[in-house]
Length: 288
Length: 247
Image (cartoon, rainbow over all chains, first blue to last red; front, side, top):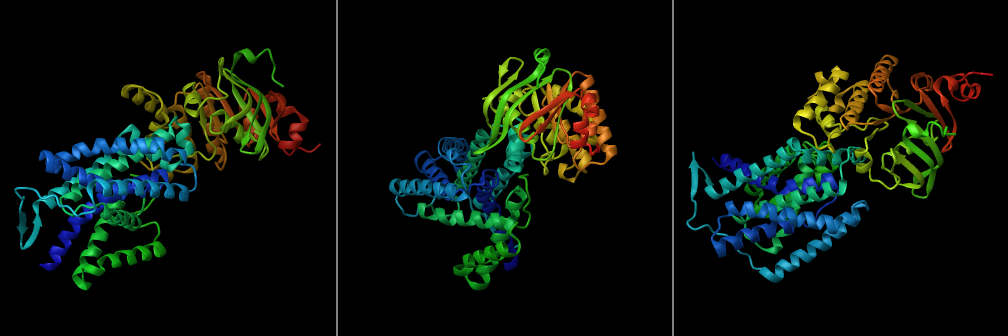
């Protein structure tokens, strides 16, 4: 039964990891920007959920609807006003810029929220379900479903909507997309906005499960990075596969060699993948 | 070189146009007119600047100086999107399809900048599928999986979806079998007969001169000769330089 529990935990956590990574993967794939603010966006989303719950008793499920547009606008504006100025520069320039922006955002959060760990505790608690001795907390289960739903929404946007096709087109061939009349700077801003919205929503879901502190942002960023490398940039399915793989490795690793080394294991795997299969499990050109 | 008598009937007119990449000047004062309803060919050896001219005309690289007129509008400072909205459509060298996307999605990208209803979109898609029935058979297939000829059909189809008044095709025949080239040439003839102006850049000089009404010869970033396709075919200097005819 332990094996079944580990497997279920990994599936649940894996979907959440995918949700963390997918916005990061989108921005990396389309803009060729390694967005180091991503982790702080997630933490800010968690604070949003926490704040709304503490002050107005708004359930995190509804906070998702607040976070998505708010973070989209936030991301859109950052891209339009700041990142678009250096978007054609080498990747190190944008990396440094997002690093600086992350320092600003993260320290602002430390200033306003303090570095204390906080927890969003639903009252009354939602309890847990158990099937054949496999126990899953209900809030975690709903968060997983929500994470899957968000992932699927991105997939639909990219596959079905006109703007989504333009995002994919810019990723595949920027010049050809310009010939189709695509205004690339505006598509970049929309893609960055979508990435931020997904990060904010992921943060709302994380608030239900993990303690909240500005200090956790690097952990989220690290997870997003590993998931992208494992699954491969450029596909929603890749992010899902990468997320579940990472969660499985962490789960099995904690059970076998102790939780302290689980993260080490995942980063060792990162290096192995970078050497042996740098395109990831399902990596390909094109974000579908 | 441009005959001033016909310039009034042109869809695109270039005067002393210069462009290049950063510090490197490629086009050294191009004078050229594409007449409405005609097929105009642009020929020349590798590195003559033909593709650079196409890229300048579609707004992919900036025009440094000179005039770029389209039906009275000055497009020398216009963005790619603005040029496209005037009906100047560029089918780029190497097709540049969105490989991971299906054929139909590629065609839909062609119509990206047009704000049209879904029924109009459907009608235009059907028109492309009628011109190139192969594309309809494979419409849900990723465009990267197509053969070279089918990719060229898809690229032209994508161009048609932008509702061109002037279709600029860069290297129609490159890497294609003679039979496929014949099919594509026939398609271009049909489009031209329906009133579409075409600017064709082509390495295959005989095909180009045979197809076109007017041709321009480019060398070292300049137009060095122009005339009707038949005249240029008969021109001994062209014969020697591009057709391998010995004196």
